[in-house]
Length: 278
Image 1: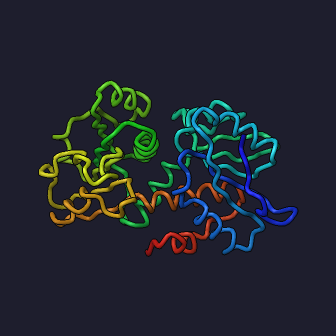
Image 2: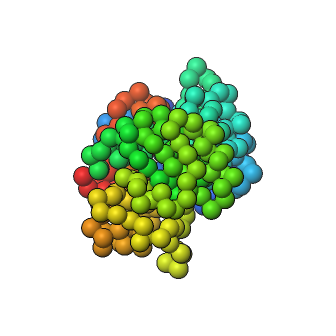
Image 3: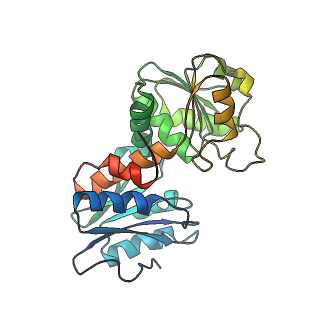
């Protein structure tokens, strides 16, 4: 059962929430509440711990409670996709959602991770992706969203994953200029993206051999805690431009904000709320 904390606002306040487990670490309440405050909107955003296996029930609770928006994080992205009324084209291809919006009392599942990454890349690194040679490490949820968006926007996408079958499944889904590759493809890539969880813990092995990195490349690690993983530190030692995943989190939240409210997200104020400087 989805439980909304008491005293979330006066009568008439629109409520949005994020569900996941664990959820106490989430920066989403900071991002969204900063956005609502910046535009003077009578909205409030709360975090709700929903244990694994109860994602579909949380979607039904969203209906009953009249929530105006819902963010969905692990481990509920696939289960929630099956519980909404319909899916956006992108969410349908991916089979997972990270956002639910309400339209004519129907719940629409969306996935804003890919566009969040694309906007982060353009804003923070100042690069377009048309004809960009990219290698993505990993084939999970984040890798899927990013690979699909990059390929649809003209990038050449190589998928490198420990399990080749999972990499091939992702390539089959993405289509366009996407391929299964091994680590040697990193040497000729212009952008390398770590979409695995390797780097979150201090004793994690590197996601790939950093000796493959070449001058002029850019390296993105979707992890943002720690702020700089060992991978990013090693890439910077080699003089490469790097980026962590906080910008992607910011911009995917901004897209959710737009879907819920119809207003353009106040990105500057949202960034300030999580200590991100532009």
